Length: 219
Image 1 (tube, rainbow, N blue to C red):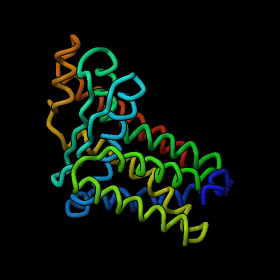
Image 2 (cartoon, helix red, strand yellow):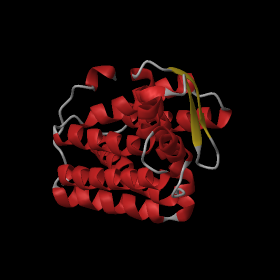
Image 3 (cartoon, rainbow, N blue to C red):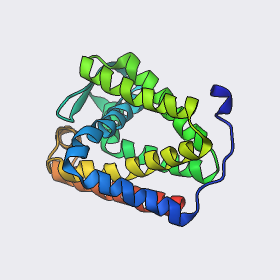
């Protein structure tokens, strides 16, 4: 399966890509389905905290994905510029991953989108510390594995587009559905001259910009 990561496939026509995007948006607007899929956004959110924190030389003690849709990442030391970057990265993480997925799709590396997603989930499984988080990651990873292992190229392409659209659309939705002063914003407000609500609007603008840019790439 790993040998297929470099495969090149033809991206879908714009109308088909738009149709998948609309279906994804409708799914996200459904309150019941969002209660389930929000955990995928949380996984990407906490993965961004962990990845940037690790890149900044911090120690990632643990990650938790909670049943209520929230999550947490313990980073040590919890101070300094690197910690601030890791804190900021959470809310833009899903949107950034969506942009990367859209770019890979546009270059024909559709299998790579699913492969990288599976790799990310495998890494997250190693650092998650609560049972619910482990189960959520295992289910998401199993779905990607089954898609790569047993489905056709057409199904893989559809799923890759769905993943990209979900990440791009869930980014601003997660910001909008959260409080105007989330905990990450309060931490950044203590570290910078920008108030907590200011960070909320920065995240909102950044995720909307990523959605517009990603949609332009996919279409």
